[in-house]
Length: 276
Image 1 (cartoon, rainbow, N blue to C red):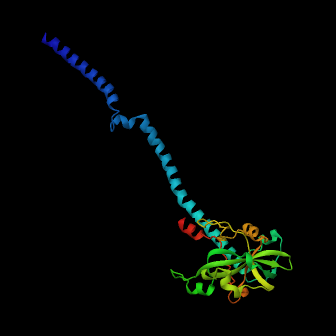
Image 2 (cartoon, helix red, strand yellow; image 1 turned 90 degrees about the vertical axis):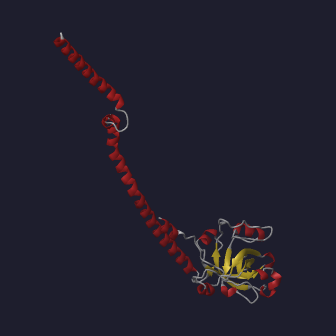
Image 3 (cartoon, rainbow, N blue to C red; image 1 turned 120 degrees about the vertical axis):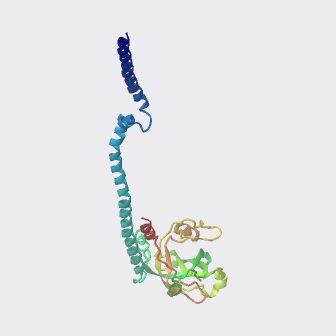
């Protein structure tokens, strides 16, 4: 009896063990979803992630390579642009020293003549002066002395724009006679310099300019101009929208100081080169 019972117990225990193993295997599949389990490492999802990781690394490497490559290309382009701009500034500056030519009235030709010296003959109409301000005196010698200094001692004032009737052409143009300090802004303070007779005048052609950021609008009613708007100036004075800067030789005692032409083009390429 005991012999028969013992195998039964063994069989029962053995059966329970198999069932337990099967139950453990089934529960292990459920419990294997916990983080860090062996099942999770063998799951299809983990296999997909592991497979896609090398592809993501390739794209990341290409992305990191493109950043310095793009910056290098942009920096090189800015170097070329800066050289072109400096050459253009030098070319325009060289025009100032060229021989003056007779002023043309052709608008298309005038567009190609900025900074080109021209010569005219006629007389001023001082009753219609305009003032571009604030302006500082263009003085190459002083600027050379103060080069590199943090502060400048340039005097502030205005440029006097006066209608000039060209007797040979039969038209009135606008002439920037030059700089006057603020205390000499009113014409009655510089009567000695108000030329009345007919003269020969040399100056450089200037075109209309757009208002720069932070520059105030022109106040036509108060005769306060902050940038060259040739159409508006011509309308106020009855002149043609033709503008020249009188050269330094036009200066007379008590009058505006001529030669107030500064060759300036926006040139920010060096800062872009450093940025890139």
